[in-house]
Each structure stands twice: as C-alpha cells, then as structure tokens.
Image 1 (tube, rainbow, N blue to C red):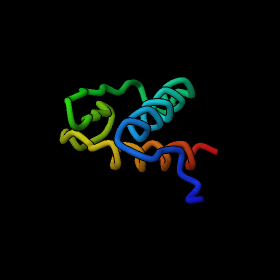
Image 2: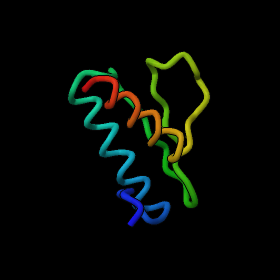
Image 3: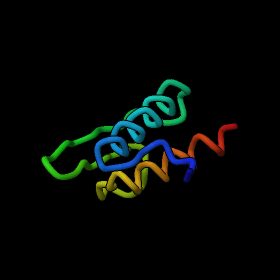
Length: 71
C-alpha cells in the first residue's frame, strides 16, 4: 500500500478538494477555486503569489505542505 488516499484522477481530485476545504476551515488560506474539465481539474489559490493554475497533483502537494506547516 502506498499510503496515498487516491488511486486515479477522480479520487485525486476528491482528496485534493478535501485538503483545500480543511486548509480553508483552519483559516490557512482565504479561499480556493476549482475548475473542473472533462479530463482534469485546475486549482487557484488567490492568496498565492503565482497566478498560474495548479494541476490536481500540484494542488494536492501545496495543500499537504500548508497543512503540515500549520501542525
């Protein structure tokens, strides 16, 4: 077992959104936006300096880092 909470694009998206909502609830980020497309999702974190959208993988890692730094 890899220890990851996802196995494909769909579960990666779900897991990433859960992490984003957790970071939002804890006040670690003011907001985030997800744009869903048929084959992928894009994430925007307005408080971040980068204005480029993040892939599901990038957003997952960013949210994990934000949550880890807070604990």
